[in-house]
Structure formats: C-alpha cells, structure tokens
Image (cartoon, rainbow, N blue to C red; front, side, top):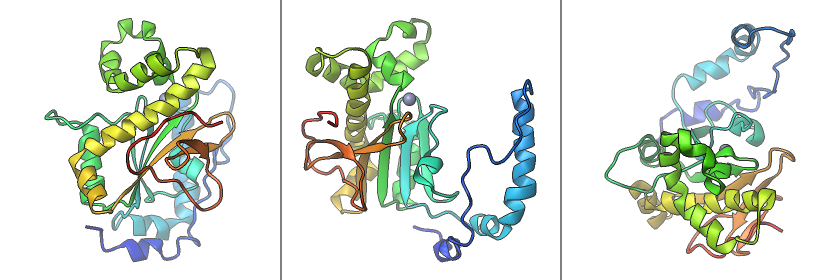
Length: 256
Ligand SMILES: [Zn+2]
C-alpha cells in the first residue's frame, strides 16, 4: 500500500527539484582529513541545500512512495541518483558487492526482506538491477585468487556461481577486459533470474504488477545499456522506450 502522500510529494517536484551535483560547491583544501571534509559537507547541506529546499524535505518526511527498486553494486563510483538524475524519495535502493540478489531460500537475508517490502508495501512498479564496468566483485568471480583471505566475500560471491560457470563455458575464448565486460553483463541476468525466485516478485510478475530491467552502467562513458530480450542482447538506452526483461532468458551476448 502506498503512503497517502504521493500527491503532495510529487506536487511542486519540479519547483523543488534539487540540483544533484558532485562536489556541491564545497572547497577542497589539500591535506584536509576526509572526515573533516564530510563534516563540512554536512554543514553545507544543512545551511544551503536544506534551507533552500525546506518544503521539499518536510514533504519527504511525511512518507515515501518510490516507484522503482534500484539494485546496484556498493562500488563508491556508482551513484544511482546521479546517473538517473532522481531526487530523494524516488529510488528505493539495495546495494551490495556485485549487485547480487540471493535466490529465495529458508535463510532470511537483508536483500530478500528489502525486496519483499518494496514489492508488497511500496508497490514498486519497476525493479532495476544495474551492474557496472570495472566491477571488483566480478573481477573476483573471474579470478577468485584474492578471495583466499576474504572468506565472507567468497561465500557471498557463491551467489554468482552461475555467472562464473557461464563465463567458463561460453566465454573461454575471452580474457582480461573483454571477459570482465561480458561477466558483468551476464551476472546482471543471473541476478534477474534469482530475483524471479523471490516469492513477492514471482507473485507480482504473475499479476503483471512489476517489470524487471537489466542494466549495465559504464563508469568511463556514463552510458547505460539495457538487456533487450527481443534482441537477445544489451543495447544502449535511447529515447523513451526502456527494454523490459520478460519471459525466458535468451542468449546473453554482450552489446555490440
Ligand atoms: Zn561492483
């Protein structure tokens, strides 16, 4: 059930639209401890951004009604609100190493619980899983050597075992950057399949209440490719039509 404040939250959205900036106009003295930089950032936000958008934040405080669940990597170089130019209150976000969705099991987990809440309570209409270029987690899927000293990460990346096997069987001819690129893209599709196993998602799909999207964001270009099941491959998102992942997964050749 949506909160009753959607209308209020959306009214004046344009007028209250926050400028999403990378540096927020803050000076960056050399040698300043980073925590001090964070504190100055807090003060800047409170004194400039919040004050100028007070009504917007007061409306936000009355409830949230995001329409999209956005699942992406914890990588510090990814900023979902920045790349989609969205505001606080518009994306419900799950982040972890490798933008992974563990398949449904009897073991409760933060991802499953958050997905259930997003679908059953917030009634999100779209779920995006967004992988990214140069993903350290996917590098570890390709080459698990660094995981010898990271038992918990190793265990977590078992959720990408299907990705590893697909890479091994289908892309054995690739290596380096070329291999990593297809592994990132394949992993998003593997996690989409895991997403379908979540009971709340399966039920929402069955009643046509939710759409699934597989995206890959390129840090170095800013471009986002989406998997198009009609084409059986990733393609740049152009115009207003965004491909929806539906039906049985097809061949997952990377974008051309
Ligand atoms: Zn990553």
